[in-house]
Image 1 (tube, one colour):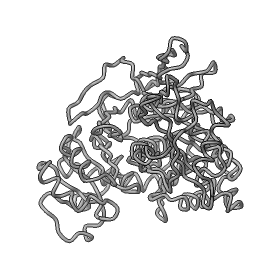
Image 2: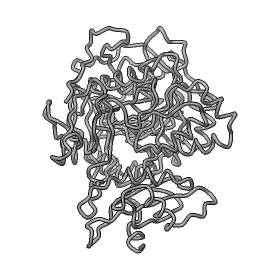
Image 3: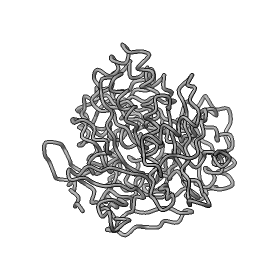
Image 4: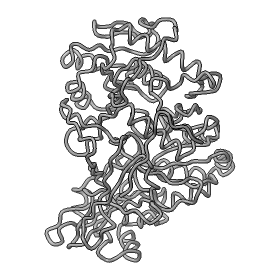
Length: 533
């Protein structure tokens, strides 16, 4: 077990670790002329971004919102999200960030349970698919709330009484002081879990928890004012929102967003902006590696200033890491985090070669390993606690607080070596027990990804009357590959223990993924596998 290190308001060292407030981000006059935010052809300096945030904060005040009120941001990744996010914090509001691709039932549930005072969105139906049904949901579920639209008021033809063009409520920039957060335990952000089982839960994060964790991550990654951070991640998700958006702007660096990322658009952004820092999920890095092999000169240009290429969300195959380094000249390093921690739990030292693990646990987090088997005391479920851990869940709108010093079971199985590096095996709930043997899907997936024709792999357990759970694999193949399921099975048999290789294999055209690119194993067609021998 290791105790945490605290970030103190008055602490001052080689790296500035003073506890800032979310309401003061993007307000340092020292960097007012420096580029802050770039989206496509739009680029804003810190002064310009500050002014937009200030005007939007004024609109919230003019709409009658008060500190502590909840505001839902149903916004795509872009300038509007960044402006609204920090404007809400300057006004002392609690932000609930939702992905605009959520379905009607999910939006309905969250609005009904959380009862926000304002829902902020955009007018484009194609960007927010649920938009056409949003007014009816609000009128029936949250009659006291308003919907505000960002954009020019002339873009809107008609409104109901609850629909408002935000522009009409903005006033001239007056540089008023942001609302002061008197206690760092004040709620700042509510993020909803992906809801892999049952309804999603709202994770409550405080101002202090967010800033402590992001500052610790910035220190570990050495984020500097002269950095250019490339973000191909949705800002409604914890990875993009906190590691890149909040981390970059907290450090007064330049943030470059890729709003609707495709492998081609991310590659083009890398070539154009030559980032020093980027973060993405393994599926994105896999696609970029393929593009780099086809456009070698452009890839070398894109990677010539790259100092940090961070991967998270799921395990990274060694073949992808090696291919990215060959193409862009820089290795990928891994990180590990979850919504309940508001950012990162562990990060690799990017000044050293990747260890194959997910990095060293951040100094702000206390941790221990809860062994599952007495014979393996050094391996088990990771448990954590500290000042940057979430303060509780919202379940059906009811807040369920956590005890301050309570250990939080992450649900992830792993070990920590003598150097303090964390190596993860798998999610506890995804552990496959075949004939009494523990099989970690990530280990089998790593072997599958070593096959030269396999581009993505997902391994799950399927109920079996003879061995309890049988090992089943889904794989996607590179274009033109002629490999069949039997060959995939034989590949695995040669490389891992006989009780670990998949007995059922399905070759599919594409993997179901969430908005960040993480494979959704719950959506894989298990019925198809049951029919396979």
